[in-house]
Length: 211
Image 1 (cartoon, helix red, strand yellow):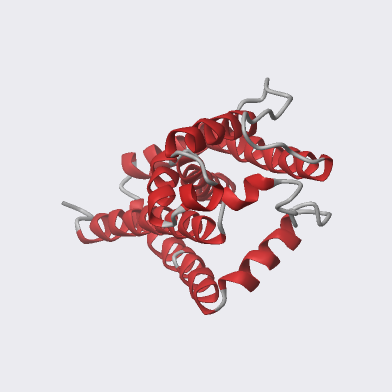
Image 2: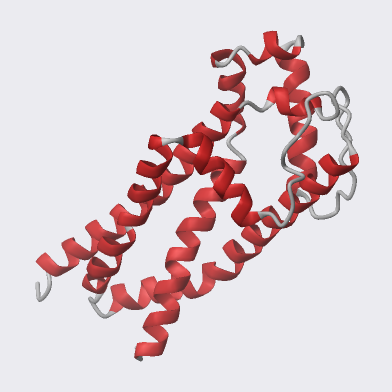
């Protein structure tokens, strides 16, 4: 492989891990179902868990399915600014899914080439560097999740439509900050686990080189 091919392949591999971690977290419906009970969301919004989940599925369907152009939740009205924010989130989710799909082929190609030529040891140094990133972000998040969450939104969104008014967008009461904290923890953990797995493969390849 040329240096350019290795660079593209490694980038695709890391992007695949990152976007897959985000995709799995977004679709971790079981996590929200658990949080309904752990965070007493039913009592907060005065709805049964079944009704809350029904609205959650409607929201998730809008965010994840490209052909769904309108957000309609049975029990949670949405303001104009709320719709703008959900539309922005939908665009980010779709971009993530596109990057996930596009990165699969070059990432798999690169990984197979490394295996074929016994060069998975090349993963050691990049994975050592990459594993630091989730750890640093997790440390920052642990110090003050509220500030981290605010800065996260300021980076990703060009407006303040994410600042929901519960009287206009009551869905926000069903999506407490702690739920988003759990989502970040899950995404970081999945990404870190993938990086560590690749690092371990690289170390194993290095130890068994020439056998």
